[in-house]
Length: 221
Image 1 (cartoon, rainbow, N blue to C red):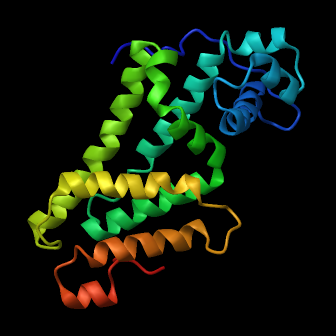
Image 2: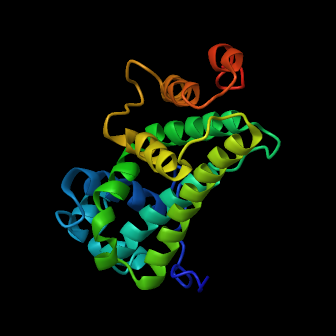
């Protein structure tokens, strides 16, 4: 892959609470973009909300699109990192563990997830070709991992035969789309919702009746 488009940008000085100004800017920008949209948010709005003058904001980010890209990149990187699992785990364990990590991560950063999906149709307008390629590669990794796990379960006899391409796309929409209604302090926790999602999906896939009824997740929860 080509060089990181982030290379060469200065790092923010640490603030008194231990986070960097750059992190504070990203947090504030995510809230504003989620509420107002990228187009509806000005750099002045970000500066005012974070308590800095606009010149200082431009010191950290030369443009609004670079703020959006950092939000996208951190979300994409988190999702790819959430894929990693014990290679010896069963297919059903892998699906459950990935679902749990995704939903807990989304619940912990709803604004960033909202921005990622709200602005998704327009990133070719805001980002460079290199930046778009980075995001698309991360998204492809997620799809291919889920599809491959389903294929592995089919090949081992753990799962019924199915169209892994369609199921992987449906799974991704079901889990990543949860940002629309998932709430950190809602009636059910992200962990509990992960159990519900995974149980429903896996009971439709697992061949062995005893496993399907008694241990669809493959792990104690």
